[in-house]
Image (cartoon, rainbow, N blue to C red; front, side, top):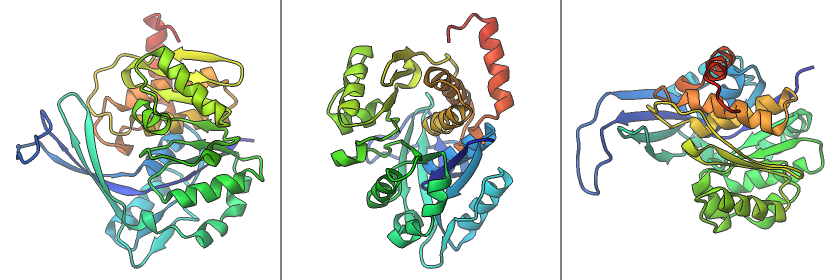
Length: 313
């Protein structure tokens, strides 16, 4: 029986403009085409996991508007369970304005809309769904109080919580107590721990900070420099394939979705991080968030080319 993945998080529509460089403050520059694509960290992670073969349910909030209706349609097309998506008749769906430069780097501003409207009773209504899920992925684009409530509830069950603490903010220590997995990037790690991650030594130091707070497993993603994994009995610096980056907008989300799928399929942590690294590397070769999420066939085909090149996993 396949293990189930529940994603609880944000749903946005991404407005993307690509330009050679970012404008300076007060400066107007001419960019390229405008892309309007489905996004949101929660939605991106749900789509990534579903495309890679995961059994995925998604809980989010959208407005009763064109963006919200289109988003739900997209999730259903991706074979994601939408039974518990909340449609808010008073709030607009979330929107993200994304600027991408010639190096594929991005800057993002989000108007959260309905994402900010999560109520405690809405979460209490889906406790059964949470308790029946093997893995629950969350981010911080929904109210932190709601994320905390779910973490507290999950401690009464066997659910494994994967916390992707983005966008990063200071969190109380109890968030980390007996948490299954935390997956910050280097910027988020510094905000949470105060440790500037610049190499393997500082990554290990930051990972131990999380473990000292009670986190069982830590993966710190380092962009093109790979990631650093620490569990209760192992630590690895894991590289990522070198690819031509077009747009890195959803690389972290693809990584998290792929990681959950690999763990749900029984892979070891090291194997799962390798799988997620390959999926994330593929995603930066295309523009957009969900439009860049690879399929399982894409990952296996790319993995084969890496084997042929004697890539060291």
